[in-house]
Image 1 (cartoon, rainbow, N blue to C red):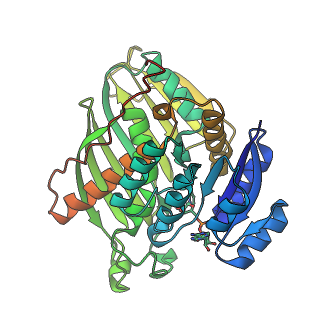
Image 2: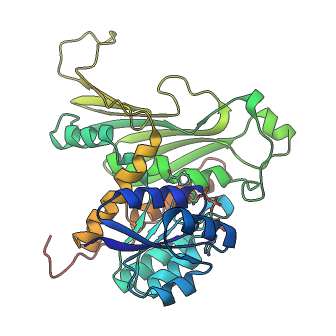
Length: 367
Ligand SMILES: NC(=O)c1ccc[n+]([C@@H]2O[C@H](COP(=O)([O-])OP(=O)(O)OC[C@H]3O[C@@H](n4cnc5c(N)ncnc54)[C@H](O)[C@@H]3O)[C@@H](O)[C@H]2O)c1
């Protein structure tokens, strides 16, 4: 039976989710909600469902909703997530929330804690690793073809340059850490998906002259050095339209191990794999042993894949701690973000992110 979904926040991304649900047999979109009446009405007409102007009214009128999907935004694209998420969790609903889970780490901790207490599935749209290249990379790791992890290098952000600088932007972006809080959920989620938990973080943040001249508060260049729990090391470079990314474009990810290395380019598009055991000269640049060209270049393909995974997990009633891209996973990315900010504010000290809430496991379903 399809899961009944109410969507909260009918901007561009809310409408993207609505279009995805209409194509997914596990989903039945039954209501849309936006505090802006015109947006709620337009979405209701487009998607053929009733409009609500508050979540409270939606929950009262539709008591049998299975999922409340929250696609609001706010400061740093996350300050409007907490209130509706807590309201939906209190009503016993499963919640999918857009990234970042919040722009405030204390709110995110509370959301994760409350969802665990109520026993509902709190998921986050960390969509960047629900792709064919990531699926193949997971297989390579599981097959032992990467071996002992050595390093991860990840570049992700927005192409641009001085000539394309568009000015300081709205209030929700005029905050020093707006790029980190709004965006680093994505690259940190990808790094943690492949590399596991991060235990140490060191960051240097910057901005180019054009922003300084405009008194733009945003630290748009984020250079982050990490250590993973497994002992390997990692580097993340993210920037928001200050430069053109060279090799690998706006989204490139390289993970190297003692037995092999893979690279993903353009998120959805391509994976290359080099086998460390092939005959080679140490200074040569051998061709990859394997190339996966998916034929997909549109990043939009991540939305149906990720939303379907959430629908599958809820439908299958997986143990709560096995939910893919869970609220706890999203909290991890925010703990890393706040650790990076702390490191920068302390002049580049090494910061240990707060540990995540314990996973208790389900006593009825032994692991
Ligand atoms: N996963 C991805 O790849 C991806 C990509 C882009 C954006 N996003 C995320 O999607 C979210 C939405 O982005 P957007 O650009 O569509 O935002 P938006 O600002 O255009 O739309 C948000 C809507 O939420 C409404 N809203 C706010 N609080 C509300 C409440 N309590 N109840 C009902 N409606 C409320 C607003 O009126 C607005 O119409 C952001 O969190 C952003 O970070 C994710």
